[in-house]
Length: 352
Image 1 (cartoon, rainbow, N blue to C red):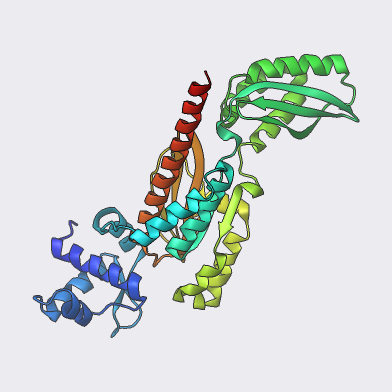
Image 2 (tube, rainbow, N blue to C red; image 1 turned 30 degrees about the vertical axis):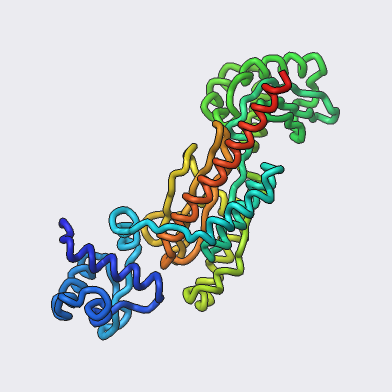
């Protein structure tokens, strides 16, 4: 069913009012505050129709309506009006980033704090990890007792904290041969693409199949965020929102944020540019708790991934403010990193 312009306007009013007040919205408040030229009876009929369509719910027969998850999704996609950050908020972003501009890694991790402060929600960040790094070389070093040290040199760093099991009767010469063969297979491939060659690599590897399996399993671990890659800021801010006066809602929220693996599954994005992604509980986003919403953005600059950042909070989230903050923080972060890269390039050219 195509929604009329009046229904859209009324639905937009209900969502905006409920976001701002957390109080069910009545036909009387709509006609008194927003649609003064429309009768209360007409608005009541439209509200009833929107309820039948699944966009609104009513806790009590005589009470006002509240938006459903379906309504929030429609609101975000078609009705929401983007806001602008105040000059005070923009100054805060610039001040926070400028003070960290000498240390890009520290700067990236401070983004979570900035987002939480500006949105008044709990912020989660996943800093860049090894998935996009290209394997330059791979070798196995014997350690005795049926183990070997896997050393991986990537385009960014050297990874050498993974011990793998090898057959106890495998000598150093055999291990060296296996190391050379495995190195040839993976050289030039991104760590995140290991799964794509797994089946082919195992089927062609014959006598060293067990070693290859161990190496592949180790490589896969580097494509997952580790605990230190997941940054949580402002967990206490949930108590600023009336939804979390309910003990069960608090328990659900704490269950999510206490597991960094689960947070990573919910937050991590796949985009290489600022693109807002919204997940709403109770609307088919199965990895998000029913009473929560998650809004995220993945940032990059100069072809380098700067991490995925977002907020987690009640479904009655201030989506216009959150999305505006994520967009502005992303732009400020990219501008700063690009500026630093330009300064570094100019400095190198002057040295020449």
